[in-house]
Amino acid sequence: MEPRSAPPDAVQDLEPEDSAPPSRARRSLAVALAIVVVLAAIGGAAVGVLWLVRNPQSAEALRDAAIVLIGIESLIVGAAVIVLVVQVARLTALLQNEVRPMLESTNETLRTVRGTTEFLSDNMVRPVVRLSGAAAALRRAIELVGLGRAR
Image (cartoon, rainbow, N blue to C red; front, side, top):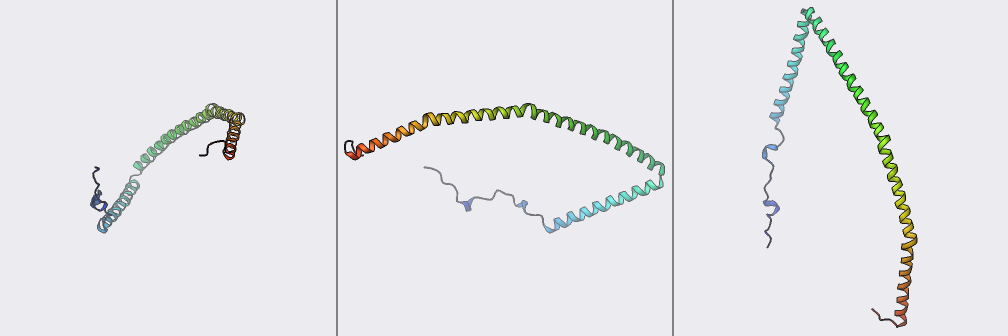
């Protein structure tokens, strides 16, 4: 005898109750925290600009360092673009030299299979079907005449 499963209303919910949507207080706390972070960032930027205005030599050094970093970044991006172009060229060569011949070979095989099935259909299946139909007609005719046994 198979054990019975519990009715659907007796199955307890497996989700924790803490997965409820955030309350209104939690959302307002998140918004307030986001506002404080944005204001702190704006204040930090203002203090940084003020410090750079009062120290022009430091501003020049920072500008020069930024120019060097941008130049290094440009070299890295250029190298990445070259690698990407090489990879695209290799993919194109792969498609032309390996995938295309495989597809052509597959198409040739499909044409051969299609020709074989047509040949078999014409030379084997149709005659067998005709012979089977003629045998069934002959059997029915014999049954109708009464020489054979009726089913």
